[in-house]
Length: 204
Length: 169
Image (cartoon, rainbow over all chains, first blue to last red):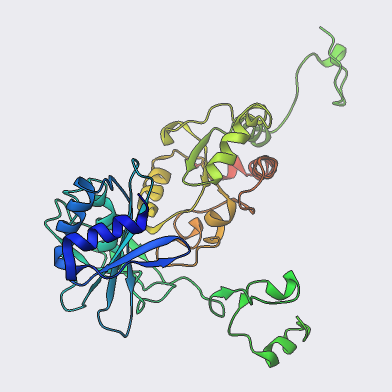
């Protein structure tokens, strides 16, 4: 029983809802066209196909394209040792999809984290509240329109945040440099004249 | 009883008595018994535990007990990343410690926010508590923490104890 066969089984059961399984480096991915059916698909995957372990749920912010959110479910079965990835798109206006915490209890906290970081709500979730940031924090930090350094907030008696100092931007490496000095993470905004001013040699 | 000491007095003549100032005596008592309040928040806590274990033995410097009660401790060692969510708790624990109290900021995260220049991490615990010694490292070696403790002991030894007492006129 390979992952591809299991994915074909899933497609046979749900028909047009599931896309053709795509393979990348031995990993099988299927897309759901309708996020609202996710709970049914997951229930089938767990009960009939033996995917009894939900490895992870994560979300992507496709800022600028529609649908804005992609929610990715990683499934695994201890019996058949196969992984499967389910992807589904959710539009920004809706920002909702059904919970799978009825299928796997661990999804409870994964979905709370997605709600906290991205703002995607899960219908039927037993306790949908923030898990990493505090109640009353006004933003969703892992959205692409939220700055890396953060925004200042103040919730008296509870918590406060300040923007972290950027000092010239995210320190990123320059991959493909000749040596580790060239690849060292530097503020990526430094252009060549600034580097000369700062005494960094040209060939670095 | 004759004692061998390097202090410049003859014990046979003067006996086992040392004359010193109250400042020095009290500071000596305090610096040699700094009981830590381990605010172990992240990976630096592991190195704090290592400093407390037998190989690096923080107890030989007087930090005999890691009192997890702030009421019974002298120095708060902030070991780890202080998130904004945890910051209120750290401040509350600090306020529950009795005077005199000191703070060691252990590691990069406690000193400056470390590698986490982000929306969730307090950029240095010195934004909420007054820090006496900063230790760099990610994590600092246990010997570095012991060096910080020694520096803190030197700082405590310099404190003008009598001058800080309230005077009744």
